[in-house]
Amino acid sequence: MINIKNLNLFYKNTQILKSIDFATNGVGCVCIMGKSGSGKSMFAKSFIKLFDSDFKLSADKFEVFNQNILHLKGANLREFRQKTSALIFQNPVGSLHPLLNIGDSFNLYLKKTIKNPKKVAFEYLQKLGFDDLNLLWHKFPYELSGGEASRVNIAIALCLKPKMLICDEITASLDTINQKAVIDIINLIKQDRQIIFITHQKSVANSVGDSFYEMKNGELKPC
Image: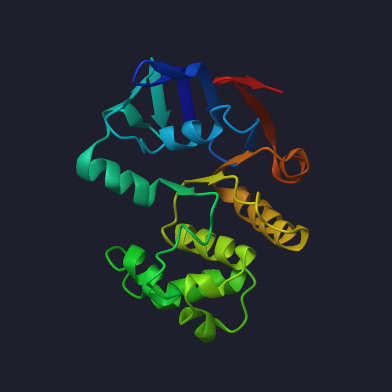
């Protein structure tokens, strides 16, 4: 569950997010729509406090699954990012380490929390439509299509079993076929977790969303 009241974000002296109220029940897909530069990605980052010291985040209330985001720091924040909330970025290939093959990428993220990362990874990769898993395991990011890289990033996130998955424009650079594959995945996994789906594509939002908001000039309104 998410409960946000009067969320504000400043970058130095510039206000980026303005008096945002937002709440969800903990499952399903909430779509955040808006033009580039409207504040969508900054809102996504606020859920895991992915800011440097030039940013100031404040709110009257900012709770995600009974945890006060504003109070999280250090080891507690790292644990929250691993177990409760995962963020998938717009550039799926760029989100993977260029010098690590896919298997090593899974091991990097999972080895501290999962005893057999490869077994768990294969289970999710198979669910996400991959066939030759051993071949994929040894590929490097540059060898993947955008759709394949998106599904790999989703699989890495799902292996950690987060309660919430934040998807920031993950279909923006994909062709129609790969968009459809990602849409199908979101519709499958939203049944038992919270999805925050950031997009400027109304057709994609309509295909995955259960509720809809628009971000404009840092202000978030239901639509």
